[in-house]
View 1 (cartoon, rainbow, N blue to C red):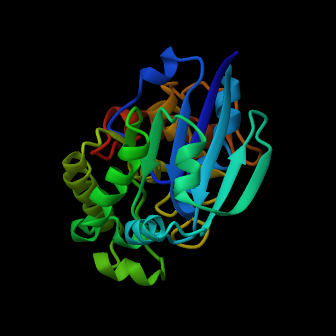
View 2 (cartoon, rainbow, N blue to C red):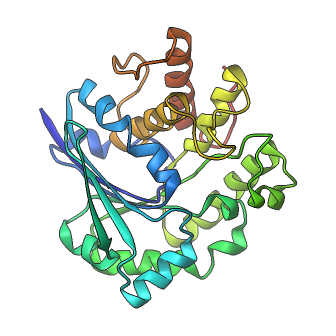
Length: 276
């Protein structure tokens, strides 16, 4: 079996990576928040197993963590993270009070992802100077790694999240703002790989309802999280989710089909909503 080690946190990808399919061991680090938790902590291990891949997944987690906070943490070498790690069977371990310096010294990572906090993800001015400084910090310690950006999703139409007002409480406006900001700012710091989770969710919303959240902004369980994990499967590991035999309990055959298709279409057309 192939062995793949993933450490996840904040990520964005322009397309599927063939590199992952060519290596026996892949190491991916995500520097994130609750939206990386939604995407990688529940279903990605099992999707990978169904592809015959052995994957270790890690997530450097702080709820609601922005790019600015990540930079303040690295400047002070602050022990603020919960380092969550999943073995190939999906078993979770967690180390509290971890630093970015520690996790970047732990392994020679192949891929490292970053992301903006959801409320500011469509505000390009919020990326600077924080994204360049975070990327430079990572590159100095892991020059061989390919950096990724996780393009996250817009809120549900009924969301009461205070950050929704940044987009006029309009889901489509928020989605378009996120796409615009990510594809404007990520290339400036040399990031070419974008994980289009937000586009996958928006694709799925064309047939599965315009919500797909559990509280107006975090993804629903299991469907929303499954869609995001399918997106990571293809964008990072290079495995098309369509036909993958893993799915969580509680989903209908129709939901499984559209979830996998939504993710695949997003990787193929990351900046455009595809009606399924």
